[in-house]
Length: 379
Image (tube, rainbow, N blue to C red; front, side, top):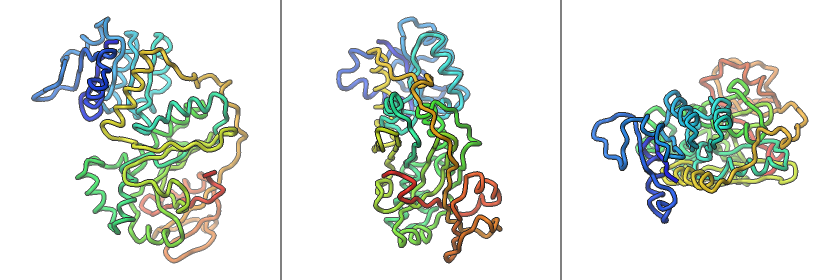
């Protein structure tokens, strides 16, 4: 199979590197590589004109690893319309344009695979699809962003402040110069929107989530929860109707509390399978490229997974009102009806709904930590 790669940055070069090893180049040949215009381009098999890839009948599959939304959406759409399979690691474009792109793939009889868009090198999407084939998945959750986990893990182990560790993460290349996608929850939001389509066959919108930044965490907060037997992690969770992305105080005995450095863990809970957990490197050049290459190999061998757009594969879960307990540190006024008690600098809520906490719109600059109990997750 001859393929093309759009983008030759961290992941694109990793895909090319892996394909040159392990004797894969005999079966998967990279015929052309295109990237955004820049000076001093030194790219193997470089193709400056994207139309040369679109019109090349020998190229059966295109890998998109450009980043961004508008340009990748346009290019992926054009490749699918040209009846080329597409593999992408672009979580933002899949989360926003899932229906349009999957519909295009079906209309043109080609595959659109995006395993690397959630969890990097962790085989998450594939296994959610397999679990949903015979099971009713009730929730998905986990540490889904390596940058935020590196920051919290380092703050705990080295007794450092947030700003200092964020700077270290940027110096190491874990965080961008603008780290908002990682520390304000937008990266996890995209991953959970995609996961909901596979786990529940349901479209969750950003408005269905409570998303709260981790910017207000201090080392004193981390020590406070540690004394209570909890480790603070930045976690996302989805159920059939809603999602929460925020700092979580996780019991020390839970696996999520032990995840080190920039690693990820993703979990699902099913009616018959119980709890499944997938741990590994959620980002990085070669782990993410590995997931891309796995998708390429699956397509080349005509391996497809369950079509989760088939509603018969997902039993309807009985709707229930989910309630959450939050610790809040703030200088703002909060609805007294939500507060159960106070402990030092922290207000502790009754078990409340996400609608309740979302109404407290003045809390953007406050610390909000959801507390996990044994009843919340079947660890």
